[in-house]
Length: 113
Length: 113
Image 1 (cartoon, rainbow over the protein chains, first blue to last red):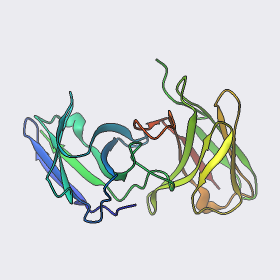
Image 2 (image 1 turned 180 degrees about the vertical axis):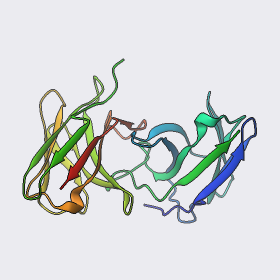
Image 3 (image 1 turned 60 degrees about the horizontal axis):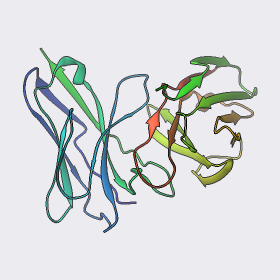
Image 4 (image 1 turned 90 degrees about the vertical axis):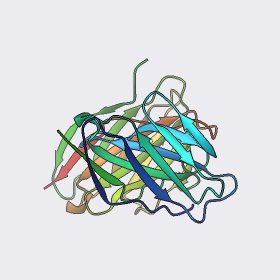
């Protein structure tokens, strides 16, 4: 599975747009990019998945450039409840592969009032 | 619809004992995966079951085992518990057909003393 690199932590304020970038230089042709969110003492929650260009749902947008070597998760107008760890995964459409989902360290996003 | 249910939520065991954790997947999901989460190692894949068969396995010792029943419910067993087995154990279910993300349960917090 392609390795991913993302910032360890980020800070922002309520009402701001937050962009978290993930690098995946070795992404394979068939790989999808999937983002999960995790709150303390809870399981990760699927946020969004994409293959190329832009994907948008009710909670986030995912921007993927043409070379697909990186992706950016965009959270519009964040609130305190968006404080969580965000994981970027690369793999099949489940987000994983034969070795299951490979979670890196994730990005700890802290939203302040 | 009901989510992924894990029982019990909390468990305290003594070194050397064994423990069994249970997971009920989302109705219709045929794949159940197990993950271990610790502060030091993060989220690590244990194994995946699909239609009562272990399909993939992570890099954990043989003390960690699991099974899946005909109704897709799964159990995970850890024998001869060690202090280092203290962790949040997460179960995730999916359709298992290579599409769609995983849905995680809230986990079982195991403490070994």
